[in-house]
Length: 149
Image: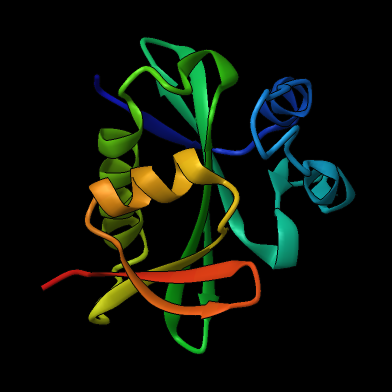
């Protein structure tokens, strides 16, 4: 599947705000996007000022990718649409999202990181399958890294 990454818009944020999941995650927290919407520029920032992108496939909204810079290290957040979860799309989705972020932000450091709740089993599996490794655990949070070289 080929993915296109486009900056977040109110239309996409509204659609994602309606997504509901059966697993550990029940919904996405889209409120920061609406709170950080600049009507003059049309730009939206996500949680902690991240750069959010709607992910499309054949013009259909299929996911979300968020890019943060924390201490000059790229951290990502992501979600697949509920109708794509559990159907074998996650590995390529994660890989393409990381590749897009590295290119889009001219990222040169050695790894990308993310955090996930250990109870979010499908996400943990998807991240491991796409090349992330467990870096550390803190209570119920798993911190993972994907080395780029």
